[in-house]
Length: 160
Image (cartoon, rainbow, N blue to C red):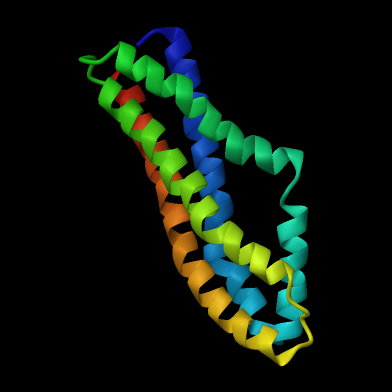
């Protein structure tokens, strides 16, 4: 495997692991802690998180990793037949689908709906209990996928 490909693969693997770790934190304790709060407090806290998360560092990690998958896929396709190419291609397809697409299709619409709620209304509390359960369940997918992509990229490095 050429040195430039090793560097690109390594950086992308670390970035995938970083994003997976962020999602892991939400799946294992952040959402559980928010769910234990009274609904108005949990809603207000999650509304604040959903605003705060849109920042350059998080977007660099989240979207930048997806962008890094483009040259990883291109290298894998151009090097098809090499023992490491299938690992890289699988990771480069898996991360954007399981992280970006799942976020777009599932989490963003729910976060947008939550943003429009008045935390003090009873209807908001009913939405909140469903939100925490379903948001967390699908976030488990967003946790596993970037970690699996990282493992595939590491597998490609080991095969190269």
